[in-house]
Image 1: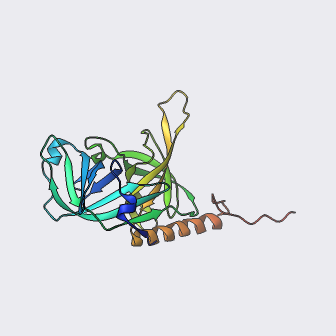
Image 2: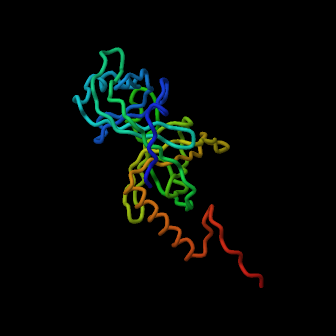
Image 3: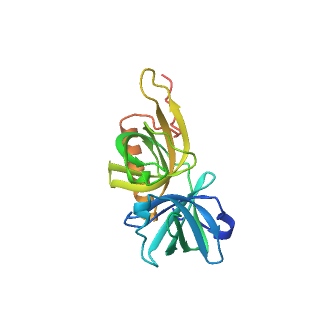
Length: 235
């Protein structure tokens, strides 16, 4: 899937939620856009002061993801500077364009697999993975159950092991719904749906994976959700 490019000035605004990270995940923060300048963005980060004190090198590649209305936006930038504590503000290069990644109507297949999630939160909480259970998967998104609620919208990190033809899928996703599951006598849990933010090669691999899973379901005579099955002939 090739994302649409949009002018940054049409998308970026002060107060907008943003998730920033480096490729090696050494720095991985949630935050908001504090200020938009001619060639730079000021991002106020929800960062642990001990981690924040060690900033990336000038020019280091920074990836950014932002939840949108039924979609996600992402762009790459370069690190410029950071404020002095107690402020936790990064200054990065302002992009000319951002990529709009829209959730598509893919076939969903039920898939009960253990997975792990980093939820959005303050003061470095994204550095902790939580164990969850995958419910279903498509070429553009997933649903899972969790003992932790998720903000809508927010950017999370998902890690799904043992996918056919892929192995471990490690990607960001935008939460698009979160509903409580009634569990009498037990601690509450939530059903969470999210739209995946994937690179082109990841998208192709996941679509192929879901197609293979769909084929397996059909060969076993099982119904696949969100798919129009031919009516069975009457006896």
